[in-house]
Length: 272
Image 1 (spheres, helix red, strand yellow):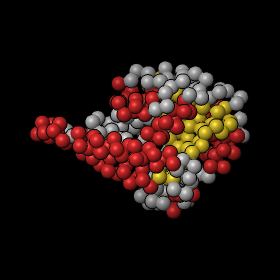
Image 2 (spheres, rainbow, N blue to C red):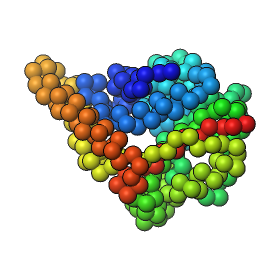
Image 3 (cartoon, one colour):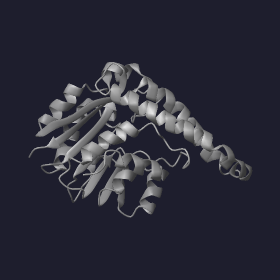
Image 4 (cartoon, rainbow, N blue to C red):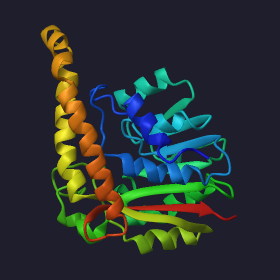
């Protein structure tokens, strides 16, 4: 069994998002990684994982340090995943949709962070069926998706796929937890973990954490900044560590509060 926050410290150490500063990584995901850590501890073995909708691969990185190998799937290619596949030899990157992919193996753990909301209702049954096909008994599925109680209908947000600002990879629907549970229950999955996260406080601090970290990475290419930044970089580092504690405490306190949390987390285990 892995230590409670093992994944989080790997995430911080390896700075899973290459858009951010290595000196000032994202410190707002401690609770998220803690739940993921609990989920992988429920796996029968740590052989391989599948990260569907991997984005930059920021979540794949800590898993690559725990599982023997992994596969990151993203609808279209991006430079972040391409770079990761060169750095980590135990990572396979594939582009497209899993419904149209052939896999030669089953996956012990399937990660879907910010994926479900991008699936049209007409495709959802086939999608869940495909996920089930990719796992044997004991397989674990982790889902992080918008909480409809907090976010409201997808069609009422600027992220809606047909809102004129985004292409077909926008949000189709913010699915209710009961809908997701019912679909996976029909494929012999049992719900074993559920919680809420991404409260107002986390999203408030996250804007500043990302803004400062991105700027530090950008300015680090400047020779003058490289010379003087070690003098004062300890100030934001201390501030980030304080933010980490504040956000984690608030997220833990509101883990069962669907009114104040933007995202819903549910973990399933396949029974047979």
